[in-house]
Amino acid sequence: MSNDPYKILGVSPNASDDEVKAAYKELVKKYHPDKFQDDGMAEIAQEKMSAINSAYDAVMEARRGGSVNFGGDHGGYQNNVFDSRQIRSLIQSGNITQAESLLNNVPMDSRNAEWHFLMGSVCYKRGWLNDAYNQFSAAAQMDPSNMEYVSALNQMNRQRSGYMAGGPAGGMPQSNTSFCSCCSDLICADCCCELMGGDLIPCC
Amino acid sequence: MFGYIKPFKPYMRVFEYDIYKSVYCGLCKDMSRRQGFVTRFTLSYDFAFLAIMDLALRQKKINAKKQRCIAHPLKKSLCLCGKNSCRYSSDTAVILTYHKLKDDLADKGIKGKAAAAVLLPFFKEPYKKARKKNLTLAKTTERLMELQRKTEREKNASIDLACEPTAQMMSAAFGGLSGDKQTKAKLKRFGYLLGRFVYLCDALDDLEEDIRKGNYNPLKEISGDKKLNGEMLKKVYAFTDMTVNLTLGAMAEVYISLDIKMYREILDNVVYLGLKNVYNNIKEKKEKGEYKYE
Image (cartoon, helix red, strand yellow):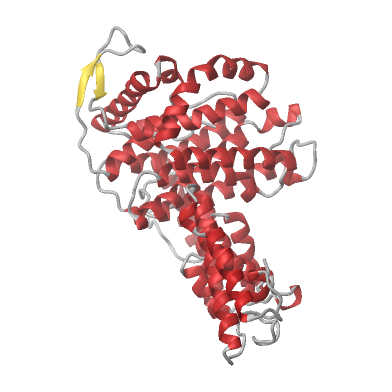
């Protein structure tokens, strides 16, 4: 899907206002979410609808004299770089498909750390956790000083090593911790301490 | 694809285990009564979990009586009573099992095919009835089975995409437990991630067989190499470990946010211990050739 509002509505930029309106009405009829009984389809239709609505708004706004601020193609926004505020709010409101299509329209060479972070968030919301992990790692690698990216990656790293929020502290009974290994760990720690000049267990 | 959602019995208290069993028992009887005698034999623990989640969300107290049942004709065991207590789970079981059997008939080995061919006729009528009552779930499942076949045909190497059909199916099944918009969204994510876990377990479980027979398996495809052995297999296991952990970690997050009060210990047991135990068992079975705690 393109982020050109005219393409979304399926009309040429030279179309008259009436033609744009007619195309818009036709699309609304086609994609109205109430028409779909299937949950998944209704969700997709919902996202499609909001894309159509914002495209229509953008076109109408522009024709009333404002500027088209809907994406890169129409000369509106910061020369090819994406509007991260818009994408963030789309992700927050659960409009994943549209957020993804906006991200996909960003050309390869302007995909910066934030792009990877946002794409990771899209994947995470979808439940595509492996893709999300890869995107977050890319973001954190490109900009290691950004706390947002790093903490997203850290959280996934914790989960990757087996952490489950709210889980019992004891964990699984098959784990290696037992009384025996507890003692041997202590003795081991004592030896280490002694090597370093200290002492953990004074009697040995 | 079934039987991966189970409690970890050694860590269950006796009364919790009784509740769990009585729900399973009630579900089995409900299937026999409403869906036909044969369908009950396909019931797996997964749907007992769905049923308990259902009861917990509706905050329904369990009314169990000692009854005889066909699996244990000599001993009376606790059985959930009440006609409506597990309707949804029983319908869901029929819908999902019907599609699984259809899938088995298309591409399982000779044994699976035979079993599916024998069982399938008994599911035709119950499926029609259950479909009528749960049109959304049935239609979603039909669409997703199509997606599943497409994924298999295309031999998709992305693990996320390979999990998608099963995950979406479970998402629809759990989403149906609540009408409230917010809770529904959380349940759908919970179901999605649980389905992802189930698919990963299934893929790991079947890995050797799929390699031998040349079937599609996303864990095999990720290596890019057709022949898997030694070093490569270890890598695949490590990858599966991380993917499963990621899935369970994200699942625990949304599970907490559901903030279920009733039957919490039982659900906790499955979510935090049971699933990990099932996964560990699959790995161990691969190493030793047998199941533990069974």
